[in-house]
Length: 198
Image (cartoon, rainbow, N blue to C red; front, side, top):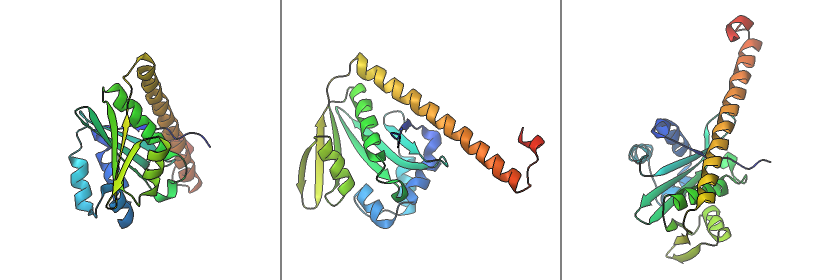
């Protein structure tokens, strides 16, 4: 299985972000946001994302829906990361790919530390924090994890640029495959002639 690729998203992705978060069940929403949140609350959260200051990364499935999202909020010399992966796509390394993409973005944004806050019962985030050797402080059912980041260098900057280019290429390829598949399905159903498909 290939490594998931995380593509940087823009404000044009707000509707797709809302669909992703609203597809999370009640328990998953609580784990992602730290408390229960309604569809309206999710819409407000997405509408408030500052794409000029922060970064949002997405991993897409074969239908070009967001399977996983990583939101990096920049605050001074600290960046906070929140991650969500839809249940059907878990266990495929998407959370780790989003963490790694966020890590290099934060490092190249001159951030000195990456921070994650989650409930201690959020096993997936606790696993990522432990695997990434983050310092974890837990208490009262919540955990804070910190990772000191090295300064950016030419290698990290080039690495981030390459990751984004590869993710863009992957997205374009998935879009072409999806388009060809839908045209084929429509032709099999007799709703599109070969001439119309051109």
